[in-house]
Image (cartoon, rainbow over all chains, first blue to last red; front, side, top):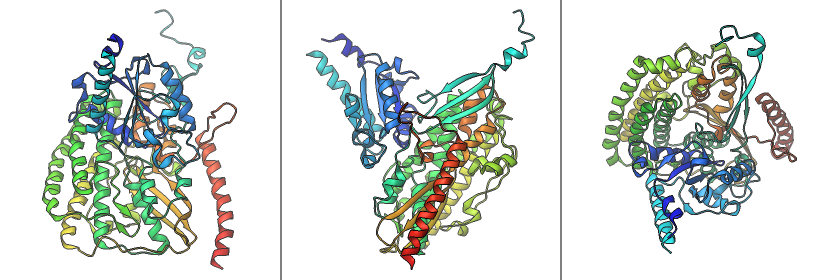
Length: 143
Length: 415
């Protein structure tokens, strides 16, 4: 059993990376921390630096300028580290895909571990997505 | 320590640059501030944007009029009703359409409810920026019922998709009204609590009173909008100055204060929420009486141009649309309130300490996804820092070029 992977699923510290979003997913992420959803119950919290992160939540459709920074920030994260595409924009580019300032979807730039769709996904959906990711990782760690 | 008492001019004159961003723990959105500081005092501020530019104006030109509101809704998730509101106002202005009364009240209800949620959101973030997380948790706790109300009335917590040219997409049901009214009533209690907290809390006062002062002259000169201007006694509100929808048919007041500091901006926003709740309740009352349909079946958009505005939570948002008689706009232009408000940071930040900079930068409630209609990228280095002056000059030049181009084209269409 991979200890590293198992440890990763405990108290996930999250870094929030906004790559040209419309702010909506970002606000819903912050909403997760506030009293109604309060994901700090599960040991999850937002961290200020990507160097402390176990998971990176990427939101937004990622334009040319943000893409270079995004790659650099994700490279700085300690590995192993989850990359989660949050919201339709990060998953597919949504209605911004034909734009002149969009390059490619997130999973063509960096490997993505989980996709949480929705515009914006409800906080419940985000929690469900993370739970599914944890279960899949634990199953993989057992092998 | 020796020498601390009389730091020489030479030492204090040294300017250090403190970068904030583009990925900074205090920011929701990627943007980059360069604070030039001498000691602890901010002497200059440079802003670099472009991390949010998605080419929305260009994308709008590929969509039909019916689709454009969905796109402009996604300019910003927090003002996801202000942009469509201004958009449908602009499209209806082209055709000179009169929408049904009921649709107007539904639009206003959505717009004012959004103001409440946006201001509560800002209040929470302001507390967070001050390191006063209790305010953050409280404000967002009381924001949840507002989002519930949105879900009840429109079907989604954010991105309501209520607006369409000529009306609204779905109706409100009368059986939901009692619950909506109750939620609005319940909201008044925390709002009054926030008002008292803002007026009495010593921590909040110490951190915000006399900080980031913006004078009325500065506001007029820089064209500040919304609560930023109204906190400096510059009483502009497009809902009163140039009423659209049915804002002239409900009873409400413009909130204005005179000090122009961050504290006053808090007060203006808190009091505005009370006014918005008042408007929402009146809309519900009117919706019980008015029943003339929600859509006027707008089919054809004639050639011409239209302008639409809406008082978004951050100030007046302005949309311009030019039609050539087809089903798509030939030119779409968005001017978000933060575009006017962000340059005021240059006055409000400079001269104060670094610790005050974050709250001052946040006090205008900036929204960079709304603002970023222009991006300049240097092909060689991949980045280029544009000052606001430069951006403004470029955008003016472009507007002139477009005017020339389209005027000649429009002449051809009209003749």
